[in-house]
Length: 95
Image 1 (spheres, rainbow, N blue to C red):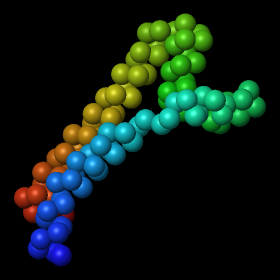
Image 2: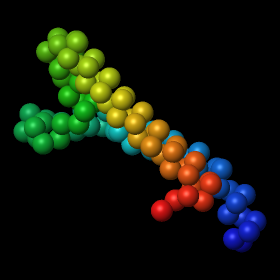
Image 3: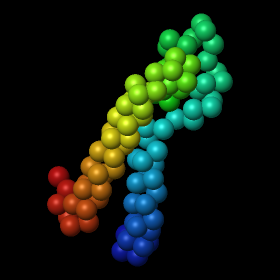
């Protein structure tokens, strides 16, 4: 199992884990928005609902675009970091 199965499925595991890391900053926007009420809005605010509220309800388009861009930059940094970790792991240089 250690010499055949695990090396055989390792590329699939890496791809699935990379997709999961890329989706880490995303949350289902619709569920979060539909579950919000005026009573719990302050404690249930996530990035996507905040961008929606600031951009469309308060008409602060540039501010909400900047927040969305910052979210994407953080996602990109996470993916690049994960890619470097996987590359080092393949070479056997992991801590």
